[in-house]
Every structure is written in structure tokens, then in C-alpha cells.
Amino acid sequence: MFHAGISHIAKVAVVADKQWIEKIVKVEDKLFRNIDIQFFQPEEKDQAIEFLKQQ
Image 1 (cartoon, helix red, strand yellow):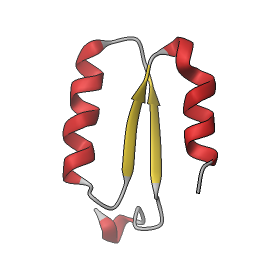
Image 2 (image 1 turned 180 degrees about the vertical axis):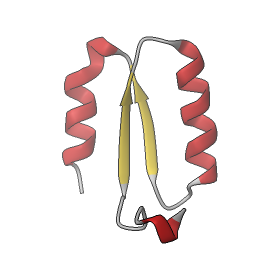
Image 3 (image 1 turned 45 degrees about the vertical axis):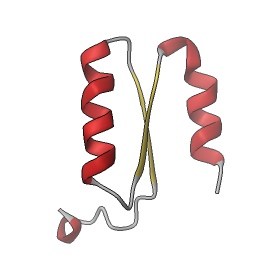
């Protein structure tokens, strides 16, 4: 996957209203240790944007 060009990605914010997606995000966060992946509910969209803005 890193040969596909994702090595420059540091953070991913997933905004969704399905709980099963949150579980998948937690697994992906463990698989992609160099990428900070976090899940947010739709009403937390502003928090997701702030998370992505942080260094």
C-alpha cells in the first residue's frame, strides 16, 4: 500500500453515523501505525476538521 502513494498521509478523519465503521477505523488505525486515523460522528464534523488541522 505504501508503494501506492499513501506514505505521505499522516492523518485521516472518518465522519460517519454507522457504529460498524467506527470499529473498522479502530482496526485500520492499528494496521496503519504511521497514520493517525480517527472516527467522528456527523455532529463532530468541526472536531474532525480541527483534528486534521493539527500538526
